Length: 140
Ligand code: HEC
View 1: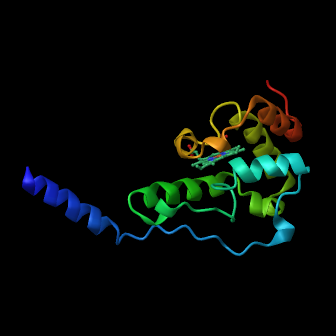
View 2: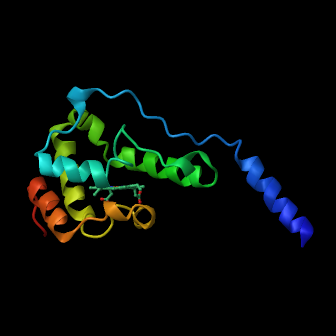
């Protein structure tokens, strides 16, 4: 039993040396998405922590294994949609992403794991409608 505990402690210490730092690339304001104020407010509050170059990191973001999850969420999130570089997407890409955003706010986004720790990021029905209307898409 004791050796198992020692093993776990050693492991926890060891993984702290695995780099998993989220870096916010320098923002280019002209590339950031432009949307009505009420839309921006929702995106910034509920989406920017994974889909932008302005990720706000909690204190535990530098502690493994939490750091691994956060790093992965932000990397994947930015790959799908990065609101900080929205204007570098082609018209076709934007259209596709708006379609995905329309669908994602039904249930998938923000990520459920994230919502457990950021309860105020959960979208109300009203906020979901604001985002959906803004995308200009309709259910099919
Ligand atoms: C905690 C991090 C996090 C937050 C917050 C978050 N996302 Fe995501 N998002 C992700 C990750 C990770 C993926 C990739 C999921 C995958 O590959 O399975 C993703 C994928 C997506 C996708 C593409 C995949 C799909 O579902 O169609 C869209 C669109 C999206 N997010 C929109 C949003 C919007 C809009 C918000 C805010 C309301 C938001 N996300 C908040 C992490 C996040």
